[in-house]
Amino acid sequence: MIQVMYARRLTLALAALACAAVLEGMAAMWALSVANDHVLRGRAASDIQLAFKELTVLKLRLRSWFTQAQLDPATATGPALQFQDGMRSTLERLRALSARAVALDRDDATRAEHLQRQDALAVLSDSIAGLQGAVARLQPMPAGTDSSQAWQVASDLFDISRGRDLRRLLAESIEREAVAVARERVGADQALRWMRGLLLGTTAAIAAAALLLALAFARALRRPLDQLNAGARAWQRGDLAHRIPQDGPDEFSAVARSMNTMAEELADHRTRETQARQKLEALVAARTGELQGALEALQQVDARRRQLFADISHELRTPTTAIMGEAEVTLRGRDRPVDDYRAALERIVATSRQLGSVIDDLLSMARSDMDTLALNRHEIDLAEPLQQALEQARALAHDRGITVQGPQTAVCALPVMADPQRLRQLLLLLLDNAVRYSHPGGVVELAVQRAPAHADGDALCEVRVVDQGIGIAADDLPRVFDRNFRSKQARQHRADGSGLGLAIGRALARAHGGDIRLDSQPGRGTTALLRLPLLNAGAPEGTA
Image (cartoon, rainbow, N blue to C red; front, side, top):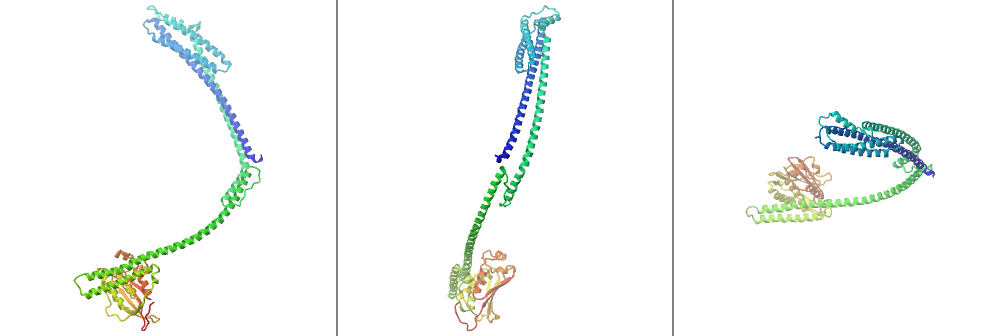
């Protein structure tokens, strides 16, 4: 019972305000009903007054017609009939309005007015009936009759009924109805003023009572609402350990208990959620690591696949082009000696074997990186693969109008430990690269020399390939050995190409224990320097 204290107080206060509003409405309805009765009675009196005036006018018009008809036999009878019909209908309307006025009137003080009205209507009814008969019996007066005499006859007929003066009777009736109209108007105004005062007074009283109740309830509700609001803000900040005081037996204490219980459940739920999230994050991290590893492995596989396709495209193009160039040069022009054809076919066979070796290498590259390819190395003289590479390069350069020049003097013995096919591939790659990026009519020079020995005593040989081509910008030199890199000038000079030649060449050179270095001036040409270790006298042959 105590727990509904605020609800009961609020209900009683609202019920009191509702009762006051109902009483105010009932008083207003009563005052409005009184004013409405006055208005209805005043309207009925006004209608009766107007009907008496209409009857007076019609009576005067009929009198004028009657006077004229006595003096002039040719006067039309139509207006007389219209006037009589109008008077009869007006009289009937007066009777209906009189009956309505009696029905609306609840005041015994006005009963005399109703009796006077009924008496006047009776006299007027007899007068109208008599006038109807007089008009029907109307006989014109002899010619020359004075109009005053005719007017006097009409006056005796129209102004007197039951020995009473009809003019005075009508004037009194009109005056009596005017007084009734004024009286009812005053009564209606008084009722409206009373109702206005009542409404203003009761409205002010209800407003004052509502304001007082609002202030009282605001003071009573401020403290528990502040506590609830503070608890809600604390929980919004994430402080689920906050508890709302619940030291009262009212509804707010019950709400506080419910909210505190909810906060405890939320705190438990947050703890469980945190634990579950930590476990999930650990699982996600582990799974992410696994997926990242798998993704990196797939990216490596994809990179190797792309690199393999690029290497295949590059490595197969050069020997195939060499074979086609050799065949075209041999078949061009007049017949040649058999030895020339045999030499050309031998070069084609050698290049075909190189192509087969390249295919084998590319298949091996599918299983391992280029730098780790095995080489079948043994002691050879550098002059033999050098001469083969020059012949193949000249065949490639012939259609482009480029001259490939070899060493001016015979190459002395330069023993190296190398794979002949690989070394020929490396030398042809450098020559082919120089031819590709030379201008038509240009010259590519190849020179060979011994280089100063290293500090450790190992002797070196240098193969220098010099062209007069487009050159390489200084900013691009550090990147020319990167796979798939082609400078802007290279792409503008030749749209084809994969950017793998120098990368493969450096890999082959390092596989033989040497290296490649480039020097270049943009627009003036490039110099490729290949250094390979020479064998010391008496070095054993072998395969590495």
